[in-house]
Amino acid sequence: MDNPDLIFNENQLNNKKSTGSHILNQKKEGKLSLWIDSQARTLFIFPAVFLILVFSVFPLVSSLLISFTRIRPRMGGYQIRWVGFKNYEKLFFGSEQDHLIGTIEGGMSVLGGIVLLIVTILMVWWLYLCIKNKVKILGILGRFITAISLIAFTYVFSDTLLSGRQFGTLPMTLIYVVFGCSIQFLIGTGLAYICTLPVHGRPFFRTLFFIPITITPVGIAYQWRMLADMSKGPIAPIWEWLGLAEFAWGSDAWAARSMIMISDAWMWIPFIFVVMLAALETVPKDLTEAAEVDGAGKWLIFRDIIIPQIAPVAGTVLLIRWIEGFKLVDLPQVLTHGGPGISTETMTMHSWTQWRTLDFAGSSAVAYILLFVSVVICVSFFNLVIRNFSKRQLS
Image (cartoon, rainbow, N blue to C red; front, side):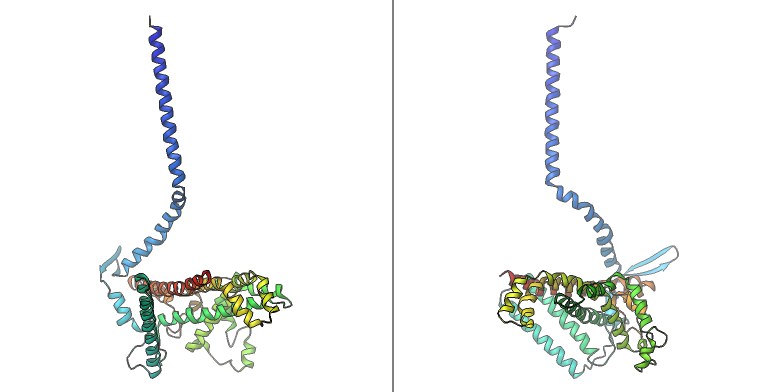
């Protein structure tokens, strides 16, 4: 027969063990909960970061490696050979130089030489002032890259456009982005400012200006292709009345470029209009009314009160528009197919064309040159314009 005291001691010992293990499990669960709470931000962000790594960073790195190779299709696969910087050398100094940069034959024109000299002097003086003002090493490095890039862009334009020679996809992309998008910004901001004034029919015009943003880019390209048809388009009688019925805009380089910039502006001005209208309507009425009471005119109010208030939004909108402008490919493809020749071809279209001809390495090299150019321009604009203006506003 079992001893009751022994059985009681064993049960008590088991209860203590179970209680101890339960307390230990609670402590472990508590530590796990605390760890999860402390790492909640990382755990929630990780799925998105993982997707970005898989679908963005990996293609970015792989395309960079491809740009240093020579890929040829073969039976059952591809032949890949490492060639180093030869693809970039071909684009800047070899057979693809005319396509990317333009016809550089030496003998720069007087106007081109003067412009290049002025820009070089200004950039050297700017760097000297930065060093004199004891800017940090990283800031000096960034400004040096900006200055060298601007001098290089100026050299390309001086030796091609200002010297009467054909320029390539790189200068054409810069014209689309810097000139075309800046004109769009001015028009969109002007329309937004008009719609903030006491003008009759403001709701109608707000709706009217918003319509183009709802149409797909390819649809806009075909629309303007029909409108610009001088002989069979819906407004062909107007072209005939103006004496332009026999004019083929698609065979003239600057006419074709202008048509692309006009259609691109018609598509993107509504976006700028909507954002800038929202920014203008957030300007405090007390400031403008006080300025009017003090006798300030419309221009002084706009310059000294409205512009400082909307400048951060304006800089951001312009930066977004520039980034989108670097990716322009649908409008020139539908309207002109890059013609006449390569006059309206952008760098994105250049890369896409080489990809279609199975020159994968050359296409990747063009894409990375475009990435470098867009990053330098956009980062320089952000650091030197938007960031400096924000610091002045805070001070």
